Length: 489
Image (cartoon, rainbow, N blue to C red; front, side, top):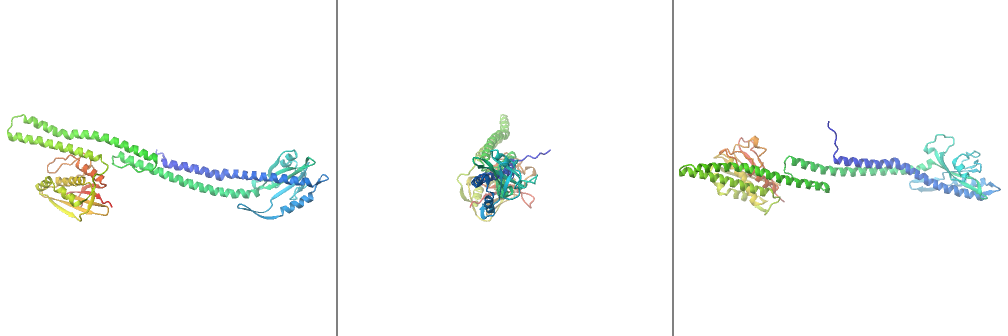
């Protein structure tokens, strides 16, 4: 059963999504309630001041223990009908929205600015009841007393203040504010909160997606890098900006180098022992044979065999040491601009190579479009070319030809060496550049030391180029080797 396993980048994105969703939910669900309560509290504070101010004004209009209701009615009516132009942020206010009623000491309404409840008993309402008891009186109830199940918008806020006369409580004055009038402020603020919540949510989401993408890219680079290492590919450590991932990449690279050194030494010792065992065995058997009675001609023959075996051992050790030094290098030394024609000419001017070409009656054909110059370490470049040409000579039958082509493009110079040998067998195609792997020569049946192509591959890698070896296209026999040297602008 395959279970979904989210990557680190997905986990980061989900975390940001949860956090941003929580913030957005708070701003759109919880914050409006708190904002509405804050507006109610602010309105109540103003209503307390208003109620106490009006109650204090009334104390100056009590004559013969009677409140001058007519005078108060003229004042409040004029105030409530007054037109004004006020703008509270985005909310326009043109008319007063207060209701005022007065009760006597028994809680009976003696004045109502709306005229609805004069004569009714409000003594059980908290605003009146508590105020007449000498406490702070307020309540939140239906604006219409006949409405038994009011909604939040159908309610009103009631704040009362005591009326004093001759040092004693004489009645109460209540200021009423409809909730719907305050709701306009909270609606405006809620819309703004929703807008800000959306903006914050989108910004958080984009930021989370960006962080997630960065983390995913870094982890994917590391996964790709370690996967390539597990396949034995020679890949460079990825360039990662995040410090933690970069340090991890460096640690993996260091571990890889240490493991490669260990594997290289083990492989080196194993194959060296195997490769040298055969010449040593041959030398021992030949030396034992020399102890037997024989004529001078036979003795000379066996001595030559010993010298040939010794030469092969010396060449193998030298090649291994050269390759070992080369594989430890990361950069080129003594880079110079050199003519491709000159490199090829220097390789073919070797007396040994010229003698081998002559002995096999091999015809060299040239197809060089232009004498382009490339930036190389000349000695290494010549060694790469010489290894390719030597391979072609070894596998080309007597009386055949080897063609050397040079082509230039915008990015590189290609040196192709085409022979007329038997070509590359299928079983060897994937192992040609493996250390110590070689194919038997068709004329002698002997194998090389298997280090030449590996040597070439490392040289081309140092130059930023490549080497490829394949069978010739549209031709029954022969192989085609291609060296690509980059052209640096």
